[in-house]
Length: 159
Image (cartoon, rainbow, N blue to C red; front, side):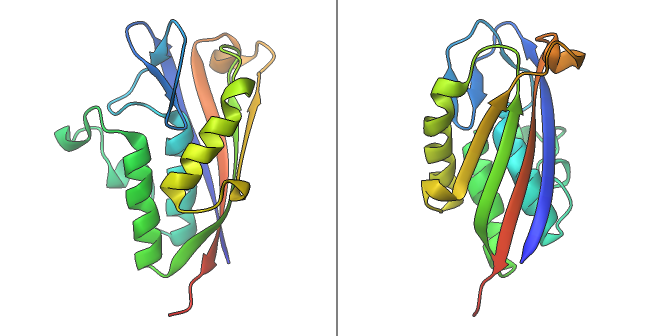
């Protein structure tokens, strides 16, 4: 078994769609980034990459590379899962916590978990998505950004 920890945050900005966990969330702002800025997918990708020992998403998908401009993060997540498999590991469990004051994300958590499960190639019961506020503290608490902490448990696949 291997464990990886992931973290990501993105600023909220006018004129962008808010995409979290592959789901478009109705909101007046979206996350700013080179790709679709899906902060949940990015944190999970970092956790998976870390568990396998392949660095981080900035190394695999640099924001200086035009190939990743407006990339769909669930597709990048599928690629990361394929990398893990090529290195002999499969996803056993994902646990992630989204930190956002607004919008309220509770109603979207089941759809996020189901969509992530599809991208990860696991059952929805192997994906836990939680949403918390930051009680007004820091950029996430002031509603300027959204952050995510994620943990990935990978198991060695017998060949």
